[in-house]
Image 1 (tube, one colour):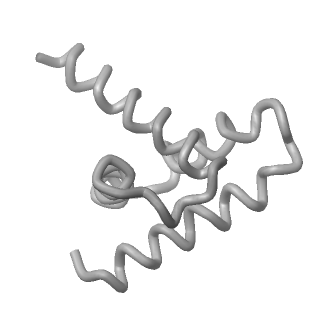
Image 2 (tube, rainbow, N blue to C red):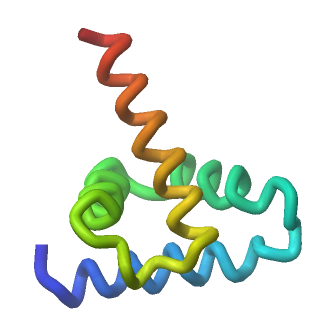
Length: 81
């Protein structure tokens, strides 16, 4: 993946987080749900990999949602193994 593609994913995740921040208590869950429903598997894998390697450019809310996404992916892989 090129750096520009990763930058786009980071930007998108941060925008989605910013657009859902006003939901306060369940904002991270709303961002997670959006990513899970609307992002392609490859996009989800790339943003999770970025979080696990660095993640410094993600907003705190985007980070929370992507951590939840990583957990969900890990649970899915464990259940199918």
